[in-house]
Amino acid sequence: MGGMRRMGRLSALVAVVLVTCAATDGAEKDGDYLKPGTNTEDAGALMVKAFNAFSMDLYKKAGSATEGNVVLSPLSAGLLLALTRIASGGVTAQELGRALHLPQYERVVAQGAKALVSSLQPPQNPSGNAVLRLANRLYAQRGLRLMKDFVGKARNYFEADAQELDFHNDQEATRDAINQWVEEYTAGKIKEFMPKEWPATGSMMVLVNAVYLKADWLNPFDKTELRRFYLSSTSEVDVLTMCQIASLNFGNLQQLNATALELPVKGGRLKMVFILPYSVDGLPQLEAHLDHLNIKAIPWKERTVAVSLPKFHIEATHDLVSQLKELGVQELFTTNANLFWIAEEEAYVTDALQKTFIDVNELGIEAAAASGMAVLPKHSTIPAEFDANHPFLFFITNEEAILFLGRVKDPRQK
Ligand SMILES: *[C@@H]1O[C@H](CO)[C@@H](O)[C@H](O)[C@H]1NC(C)=O
Image (cartoon, rainbow, N blue to C red; front, side, top):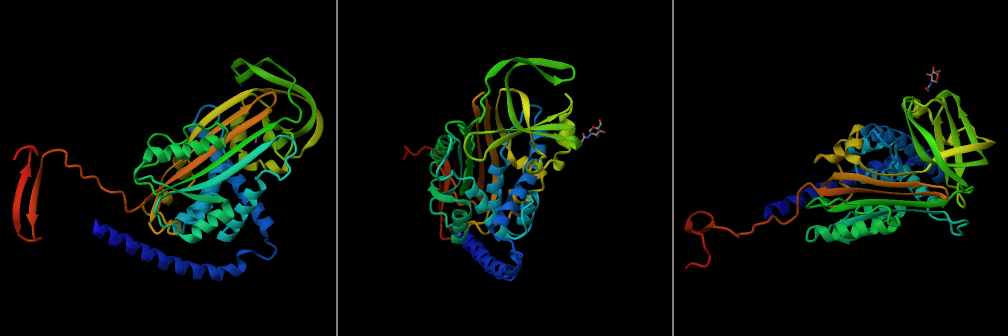
């Protein structure tokens, strides 16, 4: 135990030395980390671009992991991963940067995240009744010596406050506390966020992101009826379909063999965009060409549109570990991970998941997501268990000679 402690200190020392080296290295880069003209707004735009590219990649992985409906929030996962990127170095950082399409320089990532997070905070004077909220949180083991720099960056750039919990002594209570926060934050839409086996025994930290939005359509649907929905060219079902005729942004995406429709909501700048392949069987083709779809550059034309849209409700759980591994994020999930910047303990990520919810009906949309990552120390600091509740041997020695030895089979006997 004592030996373990000393080793822990030693590796902490190594980490500090590395931090110092890296800081010098960073200072040299600092001069050009923001190319002339790269201000905070540009950093924000770079992050939006990065996350949108990551969205398409993650969607492909999530889409191929299931046969059915999909809903995910790449933003929710992306923010946690960008925060992790800031606390990482070496190959771990490179892999995260590549998978997330992040700008090269850490400060651009940080400033971009800040611009993005603040653009998603509710407006000071909310008009209409749209609700959009997003939060990041760090739950750390009580007494864990977090790097001040990391805590500062998490707060300043990601609006992520750190809160202490006691994972080691009361795993269930910590899970309940985190789950309760997620449930409240998402208006009850994400319940039991962390499964029973979370957080893994010995966890030192759980990073959580939650997103919730609820908004009413600018033009609510006035009619709902059973209509045919073609599952494929050979299979059809009747589903509740909402209908309206309104003046809306409509786009023809000829190169993708699809049309696009934008449904705006009351208040705020939120909108929902639907992309419909020309043909009944067209979705796989469209998915294969997702990289060519730039949501921000759809050639919208305002037109009178007769809209029919099925009502839908999807709830999903995504194993982010396997999806991220497929996107090239490997080292983060091994004990080789380089997360020196989080805490004095060397750490790696063991679990990552996302739960999502969406409901689209006549009045509007409601959607929620929560993402979480469990961070474990490489050198476990949880007390090992020694519960002598069955017969055992004992020795008394002076470290060389055995002075006494014996056994206890029944402690009641003399
Ligand atoms: C669009 O349809 C045309 C004609 O059927 C086809 O040649 C082309 O590959 C399709 N493009 C995409 C992106 O699906």
